[in-house]
Length: 209
Image 1 (cartoon, rainbow, N blue to C red):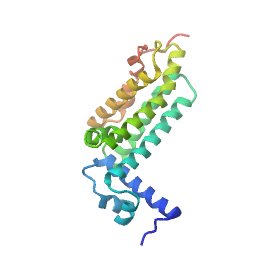
Image 2 (image 1 turned 180 degrees about the vertical axis):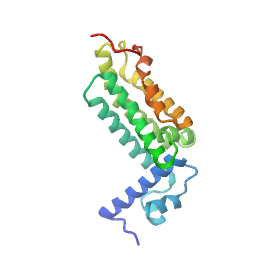
Image 3 (image 1 turned 90 degrees about the vertical axis):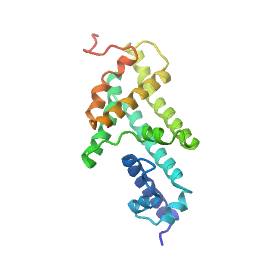
Image 4 (image 1 turned 30 degrees about the horizontal axis):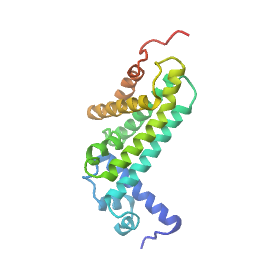
């Protein structure tokens, strides 16, 4: 019998979440059953139900992990070195890298779990909607410092960093969806070059000092 205490229990829970994350990204929530999650994770079904009351709770845990991981990527881009325009491009490059990874592994681009779950579950389950909203706010907060730098560098006009962050995130979601439809991850970085223009900045040749 699989153990569920201590480090072994934490490992089992982590395997369930990781398996669910991969399956939900690839095929969506409705198409994946708990038995498939358990088989992929290499645990008994009782182990899954020891940690989670049901599949929705597994999805919430997968979303939380995904949300934190992407937020860390955005924070790394915002806190890195270079011009703010370059930092913003790194946000789009990170999304493309994920698409490239999925395409190389499975031949198709999965898109964003946050966006996919929003389309599939946000209207059906208030818990999922609340989790998605929390992730949105976390991602916007991670992007906002880049907006602040863009304003300070006079790349874009003065604006509210959080509102502008929402605009950028909405654009990124749309770009990822289009790239998923075309199965073309490169579209993300190509369209990402227009992101500064959404905020009133100039898109094109490098500005004069």
